[in-house]
Length: 102
Image (cartoon, rainbow, N blue to C red):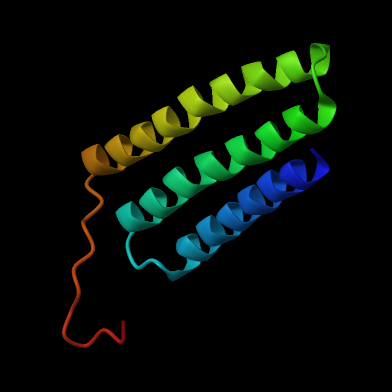
């Protein structure tokens, strides 16, 4: 059980690291929130699932299950609201220019 827990927490941490790199490397606003929204949610859920397995069945694991449900609902909703607000505000889509070094 310890190995599975360690694997889930490590995988979740790596996904959050990939999300952080995506925030830095992606060129436009919409591509950045897409990179962060998907991998960040999955990374957080994997870390919390690893903690649930580590804890076993108890009141703490029940609270962590509620936390997973909240993350699963709140993160995509917040990402969508942020993208919609940016679209309404007029944030332009990223377009590659001929002089870009990307």
